[in-house]
Amino acid sequence: MSSSFDSARVAVIGGGPAGLMAAEALSLQGVQVDVHDAMPSVGRKFLMAGKGGMNITHSEPLEPFLDRYGARREWIAPLLQTFGPDTLRAWLRELGVETFVGSSGRVFPTDMKAAPMLRAWLHRLRDAGVRFYMRQKWIGWQTEEETAADASATAHSAHTLVFATPDGERAVTYDAVVLALGGASWPRLGSDAAWVPLLTSRHVPVRPLQPANCGFDVDWSPYLRGRFAGQPVKSIAISFTDVDEKVHNRQGEILLTETGLEGSLIYALSAAIRERILADGELTIALDLAPGLPLERVMSEVTRPRGSRSISSHLQGRVGISGVKLALLHEMLPKDVFADAPRLAHAIKALPVKLLRARPIAEAISSAGGIPFEALDQHLMIRHLPGVFCAGEMLDWEAPTGGYLLTACFASGLVAGRGAAAFTGARGASQ
Ligand SMILES: Cc1cc2nc3c(=O)[nH]c(=O)nc-3n(C[C@H](O)[C@H](O)[C@H](O)COP(=O)(O)OP(=O)(O)OC[C@H]3O[C@@H](n4cnc5c(N)ncnc54)[C@H](O)[C@@H]3O)c2cc1C
Image 1 (cartoon, rainbow, N blue to C red):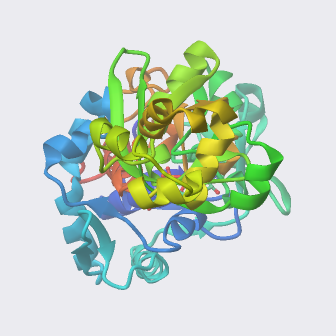
Image 2 (cartoon, rainbow, N blue to C red):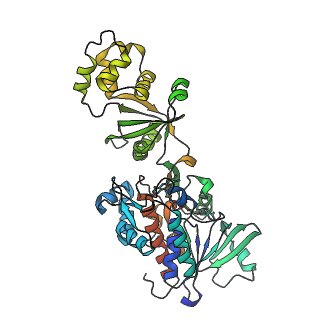
Image 3 (cartoon, protein in one colour):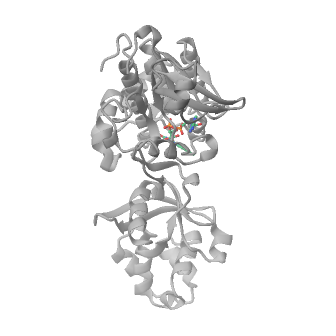
């Protein structure tokens, strides 16, 4: 349904980066935008993402950038062609936020913070006439019978949305709606995935939400857990074969936790690890504890006579293995391997560690799964629910950390917002 420009009114539900970008796109087309959010304030996960450095995007060229979205690359590409990492940086500059490229190629605001950026953005949105309604949890659509009986509903009542508010339920009618409700990680920040049954009951397909950029459980002994939980394991490599028979072998840093393994290297590999565990029930990865030394070198060093030196000082002196790395060897290997230098050398280069399951989605940095792009048109409108647009993490894509998540959230918010403006027939909006 479309209406004239003068009466166009669109709801954006969810005030994260995707929803706020949709609101901006709509207001730029002259549409009256109401942002509703279940929480007392918007952008809570965005602010959390900014803790310890707001990594907003990445400076690598667009082609490798797009590869980060894996199987969803072809769907994300048109979004990033509309609003890619360079456009995002220019947009930030316009907002008064300068950015810099860190040593890893990641892009940060110069002050590293999310809060000043969010403040400036909200200020600009309010100035543009965007209205914010907090503590308004969207709980579904009013049924057709209820709408017909409701005198306040307008004739075009396809989107009479119902919100749970501190003052009870409230129904509001809009010409179109942009849903930007987030995924299922860190639900206490607002994105609790309560939207899933609301959409599936309207026959919208939703792929199961899975943890992404997450840790994995390992059945550690009480000794290892008690003595080494919380310790980083620096310069290590992980290798394993994924469900498509692709061999992953990557170096980085991991964190040994009470429950298993986490850290940047694990997060970067988490999608492939998760899928293999889903297929096989578990996955044994190989840890290379001395990634800087080839096997032959480790072999020649470890097999040298150690005289009266203990095995610990022998390994430390010869191949630099000590502390948490040594503890991992003791944890995973039978005692007799320590008396068998060639076997020990092989274990140092490929220590098997069994990953049992992903950590719960509530702890993950992001989530995979959600509404598949196949159910949406190029404006991110649900094909069989005209006037209902979707953006952000609630769509079925995933990416590693590094700014790729936020970039795709902003881009999809913009595309959905422009699409909703065009749908309502707003002046200047292009279909
Ligand atoms: C610890 C942490 C660190 C991160 N670090 C980075 C990083 O460095 N770089 C990066 O790119 N990404 C990072 N991310 C991920 C990034 O923050 C998210 O991908 C992004 O916030 C998702 O944006 P969104 O707008 O889709 O959803 P969200 O930001 O989750 O916003 C969804 C909004 O919808 C509201 N909502 C949900 N359901 C309802 C409902 N029924 N009714 C009304 N409102 C509702 C919520 O309250 C929320 O405000 C990090 C995430 C976490 C948790």
